[in-house]
Length: 254
Image (cartoon, rainbow, N blue to C red; front, side, top):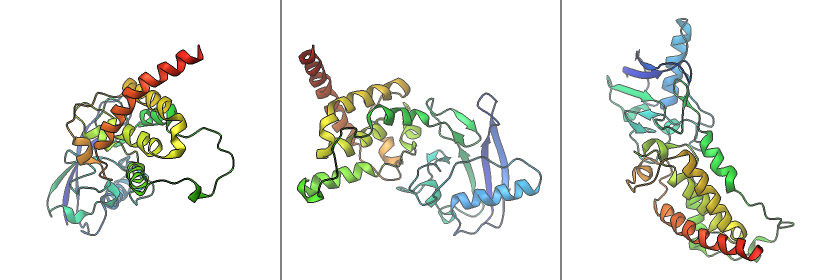
């Protein structure tokens, strides 16, 4: 395959960026998208040029670090697929492919295709964990969890934190990410002790960095794990309850 790439190049956060055009010939249709970028970078290095900076780690659709915009679509044209799992056979021979970093105010560009996604980390730091001292691990079967609840929590826990939902959203909202991280804890018995404080803290930190959800559902369409926007509705309901319950608990303490 012979591919024409238009790649966003930006040397640093404060520098101006722009698209550079590269011809990449002799690409196997069985290559992954990242392997194709590796070929491009090998050739750029051989020519004495600066390689294209992009993030990757596991290359198995698990870590979420590989995300880029491909022809204006987060992770590319194949639904339910991370960039590292996308293969070149999804493109036509001779096609022009536009590759950009995530486009969101909360994700400033560091270099080329690499963005700073630490705003997502701030949400997790606000409450995406269980801190209650539960003692030694109990026998698993002593805590009954209905299968439907366990399955729903597992669906939420599939979120890999790639940021595609934010990049796809016209408002730059992180509601799907936040909702998934809240739900996989709030649904299970172990997460109940901090359910209301967790929900309120995580949502309020989210609102500091990201835009508001207006139900475009672009996030669900772009998610490589196909996480449902139903979790956003669950989060909104819990947030409303948390505002009431947390105020009542505070009044009781005072």
